[in-house]
Image 1 (cartoon, rainbow, N blue to C red):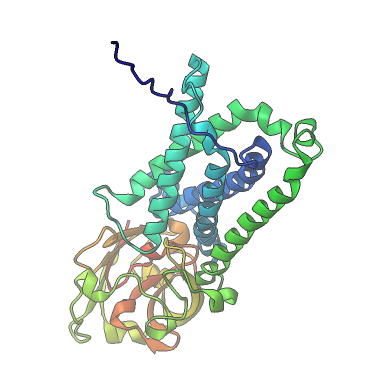
Image 2 (image 1 turned 30 degrees about the vertical axis):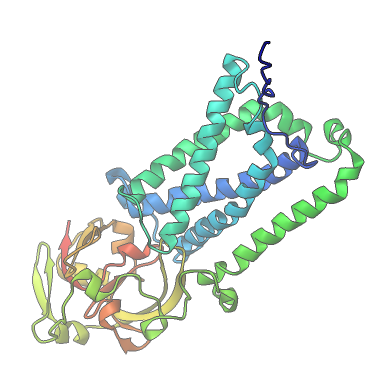
Length: 383
């Protein structure tokens, strides 16, 4: 008597029966996501080249408008945070296509899927690492800045390729008046509007509760951002403390500022304070996205350089007492060095600098990333 064999059911790809996993929904969300990524990428380039300018660009970087970096970096972080719920919604709208069967139908289809894989991986990587950078948490073995910058270019290329490949479908579903969009079931209209409204509300919520760290009129709603613009010594946040930088208590009597140039000289702290003091209202704007304007008092960099016999096109190298850190030595191009707003500051909001804010002296310059506003300055070198 023969043994009957039970036939196993054929394995099939998962079924996705949601009505809104369609091209019209994906295109609607994709427009917002593309705009957010474009703003984030453009402002990210500005941030990178202000922090790490190539030699040929150093003297060409503008020092005005004074609030320029505050605006661009605030937009960079805000657009990056806004892109997170948009990316999640976009992936929800298109994820059935990720499980399409068969997975590869042709060479062109294989290239398309590879480009999509690069696009998704790059977007997730950039937004995840960028978000963790805002809280200064780096749970990875690589250096954040160069890798984040390189993957940004990879993401931009993958996005352009994706738009080029999908352009016919994007154009067909771009507006409600298009024939392809009109052909979609009318019954899906209210649900689609509800979904898009929910996505817009999520974007608005994360923006409202974080953007106050740089757009101070909304600071009262700053409940999810890692920094509040009013929290810190003398009413200004601090990223890197004196302890973290390895700066022990500075003896005011022993402190000396060395200015090296054609006519080198040295100043004690008392002599530095006896020079003509000027005031500037300038923001501290950090790469993590927070910023706030403050009143700074100190000696103009131009006065110190002129006394050292520096030519008008001279750069200046600034050396800190800081023992640890990538920005212990910083170079300023001629536009920054000779801008009348650039100070070697001794006071913040009318009070002597605290140790965490760079006592006894620090740089404050317009349109400049916070990491380049060197604290604990001990030497200026005319280049």
